[in-house]
Amino acid sequence: MPGKGDAPVLPGARAVARHVRISPMKARRVVNLVRGLPAKEALTVLQFAPQAASEQVYKVLASAIANAENNERLDPDALLVSEAFVDEGPTMKRFQPRAQGRAYRIRKRTCHITVAVEAVAPAAPRKAVAKKAAPATEAAPAEAQSKTEDAE
Image (cartoon, rainbow, N blue to C red):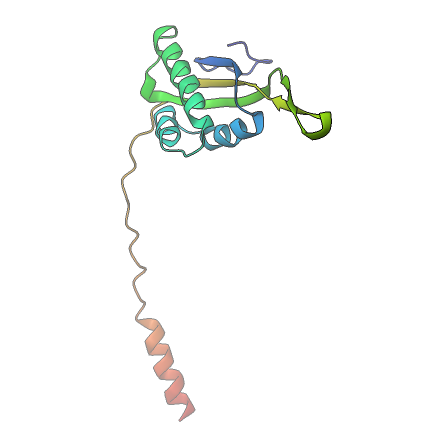
């Protein structure tokens, strides 16, 4: 993917689904859930998301991962959703007959879903490090005792 200026370009791939019969606002809600997540984790999030648009976004993300794996020879476990956005597509205009000869316009909105993934170094699993409590100093109680003795 071409980069701007002298910034190093990370290897990656993208996929686009055009003319998807879902409102762009509804699709953006789902895309915002996965932006910036590791690719495998994003697939899991989309698999269990209750929104109807999650199925379409899942397919686009799976396609982007497959593109990275087959075309760019990247490890699917080391992919990150670097870019995900939804653009407005063409709107189909229909008419619904109403009472007394009137007609109401129905707008059937479409959208274009774009997902880009890029390779990052696979994160090593972190080990849980238990922090030890700071040991209580023995000087503090001694000072308290000396202060009480001075008061007497």
